[in-house]
Image (cartoon, rainbow, N blue to C red; front, top):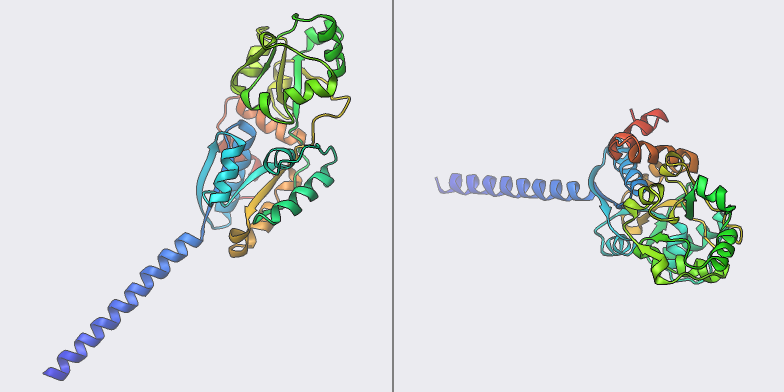
Length: 307
């Protein structure tokens, strides 16, 4: 009886150990297979984030959707802290704001290679960039621009210098302090507006405010669908102040080493995202008021990247 009792206890202990190992293994597997995808909060970033979430899910990954974080500094910090495994960033933003270089780069390939090489030392891997260039832009209503003969930022600078106090410009807080923002534009083009001539507002209402004649000039993003929808025009950056802002997936090196297949999945997406395509996708969200995940799924299916 004693031998039999010991045998039963031994079998029970073995079963407990097997079950414990299985549970731990399952937990580890769930954790390692989960990719944390982030994005900033504006429309284009939400679309890029949702496209990534859906593509990874279709490939069999469990995805923690962390899209919609406000501010470039916060998403960068989230990547550094491991709160994100990846998100889409713009070469111009990384070069000037995150890597803190002073001279803007206007060539796409040069900008990409420099941020790619610099960020690899930080443990971040830049995958292939998209040709979409969501650079900053200064906008006016088309009719107003034509009436005043302002087609470029040089024209705008000349008009402001000759007619001080006449034009009201709208910018958001980030653009008011960035090195590639409004202070830099004014210095580069040789004009100056007082605080009374500059209105700080949320980017979400910028386009509507300009369309409704509440301001005369507004900052924006070149691929925003509301530019065409609201009959606005981008003023030509004829002295090449604004750097290129090509978007690319940025992945933590440890996450990519654990899941190298991420590279192949995302680098099928990048070549298909040019400025025209991104503008149309943005239009669907901002003008047709559709949800970013719905638009993202429809586009991925249309180009054959998911079933």
